[in-house]
Image 1 (cartoon, each protein chain N blue to C red):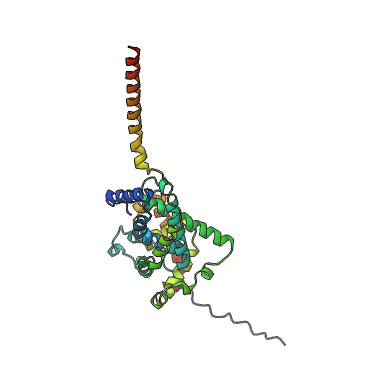
Image 2: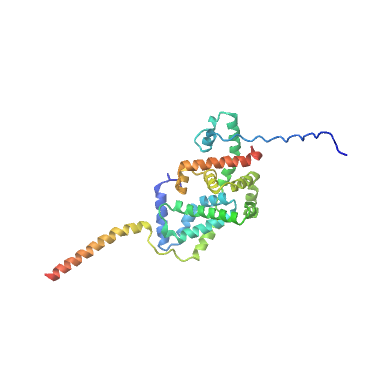
Length: 120
Length: 185
């Protein structure tokens, strides 16, 4: 036996209203370029409220520091490594080039002078 | 780390690098102390896992130490790129091996009960939502909102333009809002 009573559609679940998309003004506020006071509409205020919660959480994450034991662990791991390849840092490399040129000129001058003296 | 920071910070770093290259391993500890916190936060924001962030930090500083003679320009930007690339490699690898973000992020890795309690629901949801963003958007959002960097500073570190970064952060916000608003709006 079939139930011929027309099926009553289930009551629709209330649709959760989504937050309004962040307007350029809200984005500018989040970028620190505008004051929240400049957010005029209710939608903008609602979006700003949502982002305030997220920002509070992000600010807590910002306070996280490296655990002390990690710094020690890194330092200890360096002791097992050979010393850094003995190579001059870039600044010293740059400085050494003119010194080498001047040295070369001096050596050439001395050689020329000695040669001249020997010829005489 | 900002580009507006006094030039003497870069000079001070160069001085330390010179000492390390001259054989003083201990001098490298100054660089670790100086930069580990922002680098750790970046790795933590990108991976969502304290354990992974610690490992990436350690591996990155060892790599930096071994290649110290190759530093060109600012040390902080150079070492940041090592960490950032390591994070991206980890993310690629974890996607390839299908290990989920949540599986890797074990709460037991928090060292104190306070830290455990601090990990509230919103944080968990935020980290989960971040994990669903494309790498470039996640990176931009983490640097802006979690690390609190300016766009100018980000542009120096990521070697791109302020405009491009603003675009990424704005898109990241839109995606995160869509992911989180059901619960938190």
